[in-house]
Image (cartoon, rainbow, N blue to C red):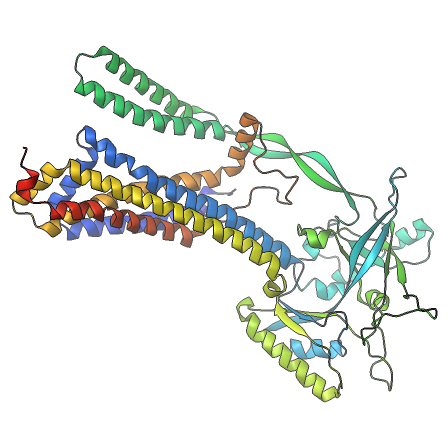
Length: 576
């Protein structure tokens, strides 16, 4: 996942969280009496009943582990979705819908003059039907719906990651303006009349097929994790059996059991440390789109032009006037965003304008004006998107008044997030719901810590009575349990955060091990375009979860502190 451990993304949240915990612990030591720390240590590590508070670390650790792990994966899905949807769009989209808007070149020049705008370009977008005649003779011709996207390649490249998504990678020195140009060798080899170039999405002209793709992973990580988890469990069991053996001197069975558990714990720990980890190549089942058309093959697209009034262009007999063009495939397009990859066909702006029926004069009397569907705008600071949307609207209204347009088309000026609101909102909603459910579950862990604190106050009633008999105040005895809760939370945060960050670091290797061991497919590549399980570790979220767990554990232990503070010395020492 990360190239260098020293610069890993999980290292900084761990350091920040550990630093905050260390500062809080130092403040607790300096601002409270020494006897409280001695008693906290005695409660945690003294006597056989110390197992009870140690167990209370597990809910805190499990809560931190789940909150960081699940949120990182869900946030990774959301981040990857945002990258894919943004890659096909620009920062601001001026949409005139199917009616189109005139004077688009002048509008682009005026928009580019706005402070904070880098570039603007017109885009034609219209619905069409593609007829695909595969190069394989045994596959029948296909007819699929598509969208014609008319672009000026040199300007489109400046809008986003369009060039990165082209499968036929060209050197950087290759001019972007020639991305749609049909090479002469292709035209001569086909023997057909000159055809404009087209770049279809790989999902549109491809046939999905299952294939085993090689992938390099770290073998042995899963066995290490399983052995380490087993060692921790056996360590806890060993402590239980050993304390039981000490309370029953002479019982050989308990001693033998403790020795056996200890040996098993050491064996598992040695396995976790000594298991070799090495890179190996495995085959993963994935779905790939096999292109049915090669470079230079013909793709026929047909569309129905729509006039500026919204009426459909018709033939003299009243039938719709269909525009068909034969395109030469000059490249493939794959962004990872299925909606674009399975429907878009990029062609030259002038070609799309003719097919959509948006050609016209430049203001001649009675002539229909040339139009475009959209204007894409790239800005320097995405945070100013909404303000610049208002500035673009003002520029359009000024242009309409200057040109004296009697009926100006209705425009929708929005940022790319607003344009893709439905997709992004669904992903964000899923992430937020999962985080909310885990947070609610974590509140249950807080209740469990409160109950354990109450039991501890009851178990340690003798110690509480002695402290009060010696003059300890109610507030001091109560705060003793707050310190106990803080230490429990601190241990839980350390265990949970370490486990979750290591899990995220080796997630791919662990996934492979689980798939091979349990014969399941945890993350099927046949359903997703992602090569690996996406994850995005947020340092702010890690620190927030750590602080929340510390606060919750400390506050939950106030239940036991309140019980201890209200207990009278005579009542506590009555049976001692």
